[in-house]
Image (cartoon, rainbow, N blue to C red):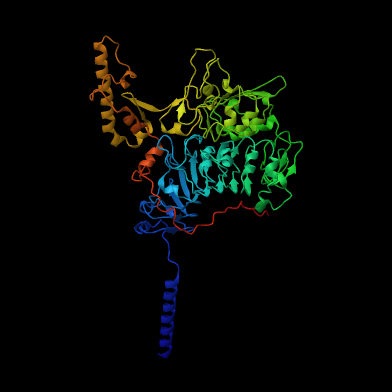
Length: 620
């Protein structure tokens, strides 16, 4: 009995100890984001990092009115870019999650919607959305990112210090409007699909009274940026780190930048000089910066600054380039077996290839053969290539800017699934599809235009690009607006899948998603359009005019409520982009309301804002 009592006492002690341990153990966090946190209306600081949270951010949390720091980095959260109600938000960190899709047009202010930045972003000091799946362009004052130098930027994110969009799928150019972020110290856009040049606004600023930004870190590596490095970057007084390796920049690193002893936190070699920023052309380096190995006989293979090539290469022959092209575009699956090239065979013997008298490739013509995959940038090394004719295939990825190095006269990628934008340096290449060549007095903006290479996303023409007329007085071909969903993503569209009811353009995907709910509205819209056309034709026939056409239906004959139709409203309803439809989910966030200054002078403890370039991984 005594032994049993001791055993029971020990069991009770162990149970009490376990209970005590449970009381002091950290609470288990649900795999989903706790929506109950939205009840804490006075909450200012919310950090739920490294917790494996899944799903979307609850709407109740987005509505917290006093939130100042929101940090959920390194979870498994998903959804579109979140819109908050708090106008005092200082830190927004959603990095290392699974958020996706384009950024809303009106996040930073957009001329099509309004120039006012979203109130919950105006007081931001840190914005980090890196390591996600965001795509599309960076919507700073329009898809192209070009700014109006005469405009005052009173509504810009003037407090922003840290801006990180790295490791996403952003395409297009780096917006000039970054120059309006007058407090910006860290700019991180690495590992995206950005093209074009590095904007001068980074060291000049933008708008009235502009001045160099206080940038000390600029990470732009591993994009497809082109052009040269501007020595104006040396005028940034606080610059300590500048990473531009892994792009398609040419020329040399300006001496003024070389003398700034940049990137020492990573290179750790004060004597590296220019190589601390980028290895010169005709050299090899694993990371694109020091140490660099000279490659004097690489036949132009290392033509860019800071190429990520671990060793020197003797270059690629035309045979090797065509074999690579065949592999990258899944040549064994091409629709016509006669075009399936034998690896290593002479270029001139391959169907679809034409050569000059010296046996060099001049033409690649492979229309409607089911090519899929990405175009290899090595095509830019075919020094005599004049025709690249690849219409009506399933090519994906980006249009290589390397094509600017070859003497192209014809470039046709129409009807494919290429994304992004036409590389700006290719847009100013003379002679490609007649670019820059036209009759006297022709509009300069149409004479030199990216549309002459391929219609941009959201537009189309019957040939997938614009065409300059040969003679004065003749009509050319322009790219026109497209409303169907696929056109918002691809270059070189040759048609749109719109429906026309009563003179209105209706997106087929919008009808497909909500057909049952939309049937009554479609009928009403169709009847309104037909009724308008009927009344218009009656009026015209009474005046001995020919019957009304579909274009005539859009004309208001007289100021009469019976005949007027709010065409723009109806068109907007049916032709809104998928992005705008997503915005409807957040319709109760009034970003056009007067901005409150609350939160600007609050003394909030800030998070660490510095970022380091990751070191080299260990190699076994």
